[in-house]
Image (cartoon, rainbow, N blue to C red; front, side):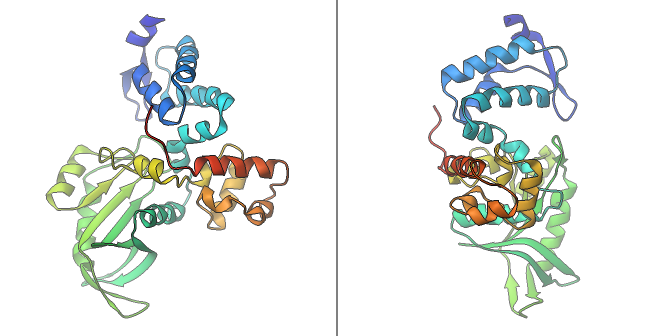
Length: 286
């Protein structure tokens, strides 16, 4: 058993082979709310079925199935990374979701605004304003392992320069921006983060920056996407996204939204119960 822990290599979504890390798996289970006992039980079963070269997605599926046996809300938290990948196929639900997370932090936000820049017209995914006025580009990906390389901040920097002082096409009002941000549900390359720092751009990815990454925003706000839910089918989740329902909290006491996509009692009450549990802001780590 210990030999498996130390020496077996597993395959990440990028194709890279890495040693199986028990501590990383335990941390992700406890981050989802599992107790030490529950995490150890699940880890024991995962280790027992490990084979050389097994994919991290297969390990994740096994752990998710076992965690679901303890608690569906914990399973929903555990599958958060996958849930973000399911906010597609277009990037618009992800843009809406980012705007909601920023509102929780005290920003006023707008989505899909067209601005006439110095040279050309641009559609801005999210405009956010609190102490500063920020132009935000959302980079959504529906497959794991995707890395946003340096070309992304280079391109967004050029857009920011063009719209730093621009005109809102709908209102004719001049818009002045203080900073450009890029937010993705996957990751950035090292060169991308170095360039962004140099150019005073803010990058936010699944796990960057440390303690203020996208996963932290979601944990502390309790604003989980509807794609996290384990009590809905994939089709039902897509139907909700098509109706611009992206947050679990918008389904609490909202029988009409659920009934419109075909969810009826007693499952309707199970969906609402899972939503309520997920909408509690994440407690301190155990």
